[in-house]
Length: 238
Image 1 (cartoon, one colour):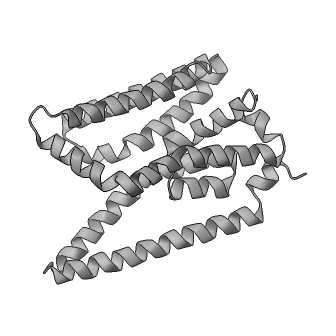
Image 2: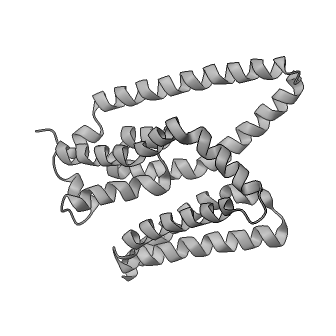
Image 3: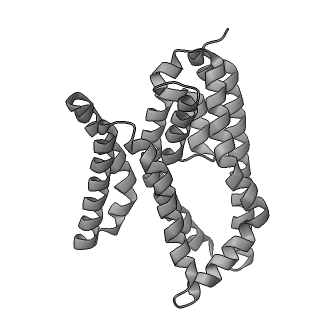
């Protein structure tokens, strides 16, 4: 029987992931050409479009630093191809590892390390949970995305509207679901979480005091790096 590690790094999975990413890249090129040509039809100059493209590239590369760090971390748990696919298409750094841990915990494993020592069925279960858990958002957006966006936009423009409040409540609810799962795992997990929050708060204070808005693009990257580095310290202490 194929093992967890063999399936996570299998040639077949690499091939499927590359094919999927190639298809996504093709769609990006098609939509870029369509939007570029449409902009020219609307009278936007090529010089303006070049400036937009340059700023877009910089704004895309900088936030990707945190994704690359997440890829390195996630690949040690679920293998390079699946981590690569998840963080390149529909996944998020904050979601993927938690989803994988929830899956292995439901299967009766104390941690991901124990799960990685088993067979490929465990890895298949992890892949299924990670995919099913996030695909609902894609399905909902397919049918209700435009209506929800329009409604939220109208609500946000009204003085004292419920739209901004609902967005804040949604994010709070999301944190209330995710944070206890991490907090009750162990004291070292709690300390890493506190360290990450402290780094984020400090960087936001620096931005407010200095006006360095560009630093906002690096908050996630710095938080991940310092948070992971602090994990080595807290694990030794606790």
